Length: 257
Image (cartoon, rainbow, N blue to C red; front, side, top):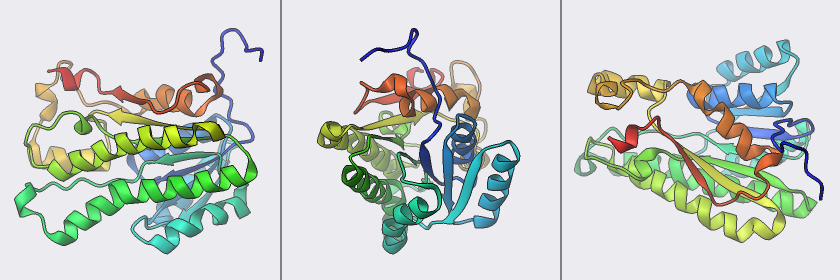
């Protein structure tokens, strides 16, 4: 096979990307970036009014996007979303498992209901949805890219009241590694991004509870979601063809303090 020089294309023309948690934060940014790179984007979340607004914005810039209601705690919705998106935009070839929630509780103070919800959204849903996308790609004999959004909390927890979040994100890392091995022979690449503290609704809530956490970071700042663009495009684009089972930390040095 002949590769371009340099082999760095981020052209996603002809691809259909499904992004969960696309109504705000990192998911919203990911959707905009994928659309700007030429992909048709399926915007999935519970807040469909926000999704419709984002879809209109993407279309106004010449992209193609559609909104899909998705509660990732609902098994029926999880198993139905892939064929639903395919009927509207074509087969899903890129999946970004972005939807997630913090626990914001000490481990011993969490209710069983909250434990189940954090586990369902952060770990169960990415596993099920990855399998749904992969199964269809195998049927079509089509390559695909799955990107799971983990967190540096998967590697570093300092007792600040998010133990289960840390555990579930560590699970996302292992999910990424394991599924990559299982699906490599089908040309389905499974990778992840482990962001540090980046601007989002989730981060706004953490700052409200904990104050200026950036003061403890080497660069004294919270990341901007735009700083994740290149990593996302690398993992879903043709240049990362030989990369699977990898989780890239993008934490601005926050984890090294």
